[in-house]
Length: 371
Image 1 (cartoon, rainbow, N blue to C red):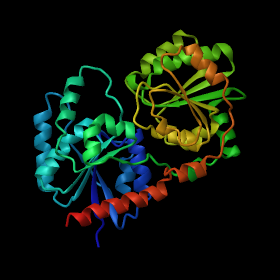
Image 2: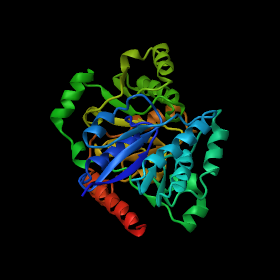
Image 3: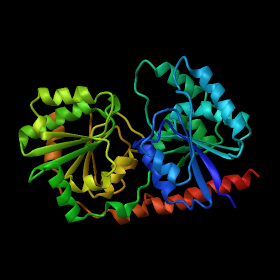
Image 4: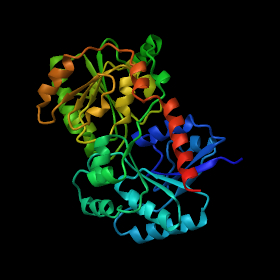
């Protein structure tokens, strides 16, 4: 028998949180029974594209979703579903824009249409009216509602959907054994980054407004004043990277801040880090915080992040209303010890192996109900 193909809808398969979560599940599924294909909204190569194709997945590029391009996008969706009729399940991860995809899937007669929320806020920018329109347009098109956290589900779908349909929280699981502490790996990483005996503070996140890098640098400046023997690692790319590099230089911190770009070895890097700093303005349930906890790190995070993220007791919440100095005091008072959190992650449903089995059963269950 051929495997059942599930269409996953994303922006691009780069090393972001939801994409990493999908790959964690995809790698551990029995691909003789179930296969993932990906509809993306970028023409450029994604970081995971080669691996997806090597595992038998297909990648379908679509037009960008943006004001002025809606009609072209809607026509492309209708054309896609008319030409690709094998899908019985469409699982969309593009937040408020999922309604557009699932509307087209509904017209094509696809019985299982999952909208999946990965954020708990949109932020405010020039696109906000269009995003609110997209969220309003979702009504009636999904058959099932998923979210990375209860907070993310309530934000995108609202209480009425939760009462009438229920919202399934799918944990952003990781492969727990990959994060097991290894002293040799730790020493290798610290040699590679030139850490020496310095305290290493880590952050992983795209350089955009949501991740709040400007305030993160303010915090690190205060940390550095209290303890000059510190090093900050910033992993990621994004449109604000040059601005943050300029700020670091202006503050005279260039010798203590390393910009590492996009990395494929996050599990290794976390071994060499002492503390994790994450002052985001908003999130859904960040995969990187699950990864940092899996590595046994103490994490200092903003109180805008849902407490559902704290599955090991290693997250320490600080208000964004507090000053950079107050944040620095919390960071400087934290233990650098890496704890063994593996059993806590497994018992709380954050192990990718068992959760991949659950998701496989869910997909097959929905298909049986609709045959």
